[in-house]
Length: 174
Length: 382
Image (cartoon, rainbow over all chains, first blue to last red; front, top):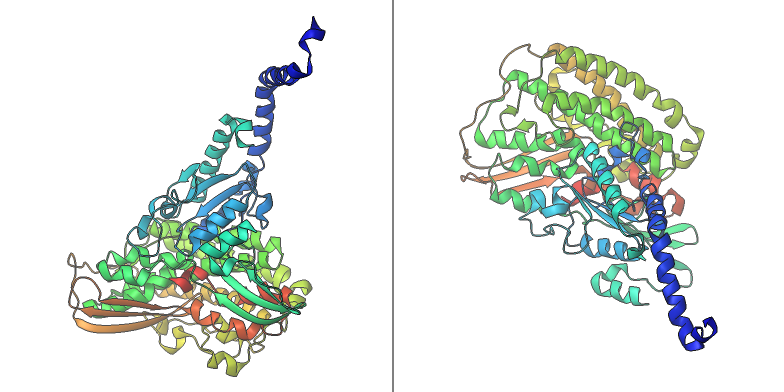
């Protein structure tokens, strides 16, 4: 009976089905484990775009210390990063660079829009050189309002992102 | 290949460039831990910098154009955004110039409150700058200490103004609100502790042999060159030119206060990193002096008419900010909005000397020289 089923033509189908069953059984716990690993080691890329970088710097300082929430200080090499914190106003000169940085990062990657300027253009909504928010160039995960947001607000935004990653499908990124 | 093609289309300068026999072109920034919000294009021969071309403008937000279609009061919040951690000093010249146009006489108490706020803010700015200088030189303790001590003064400013960094405290005609109750005692206590803290920086930073070996004789700017290139502030004073607007053209109540300017002679990156620190110690002295001489009561703000109109005149005022001379030129044509607001900022003037300083330097000295210019890219771009 088995011998008849396992012809070379059927083998691929059989293995495929076996894979599906395995994924159903192991996928959910495995995905949870993968996501758990991701949320406690978010590496923000080191790109400052405007004045919110001051509060981003203060958040890495000793009083607020984002590192205890698993957000590591801004890091130089973007090939090893998985988080872009867009720190404020994006001008027409910076926008292509920001997109280029995002494109070069490996999947999975997340975006936090920090400050009113990154969300809607903020105070500079009628300036000739400022983008009205970064939605047009990047898919944003979490918006952190404020001008500039206090470090506590930024940390809350990061925790919201961690909550979001926890509920994401681990395989959907790959 | 595909990436470089895309880069060529959207940002011509970003594409990879042809490598010469000996000379190689490097792009430092805007995504780089040692650049800030700007790009420096350096040409190197081995380890030696042959030429350097700074490329600012990544945060150009058109502040000056925006100021033309907002009235004098509406201009306050967005004009302080170029340097949010030095927001009192960047509003100072605008308020002084606007007061001349609107013919306002500032109350005596407000002048002292302004000086206290400006000096506290200078310390907050300088500490952030020092923290970044520490991280540029790979000295992580020097990032942690100033960012921690900075919070003390930020707490103080938060009590005064209600906001952490963007205070919008100075308005034409004085300051937005009076000092909170019992402020003098709290301020004196905090400033005393703060002074003790920053004196300790000498042990880990300024007397540190590793820091001295990295910054001593790096990017030396002679006295003549400093004047010729038009540098200001700490860069000028590190080259031996005693020029401080607070002394030369005293504004508000600086002429009644007792302080000295700090001048060093050597003109290298070490001197440029030390002058702002000496300035902070002077700032503590100014704050104590201003607190003792301040009138204990009185108004701190002249009430303006809604939508005030100025005469047809121009006004140019200068103050000494954390980065150097900061000027604001306001032209009024008799309407509620200014006809033109031009800001002449210290950062941009100091940047001009960068190509001269980096020529012949080692590539590794680039962050040490670049950040010692007391440069804040957002302010330079405006």
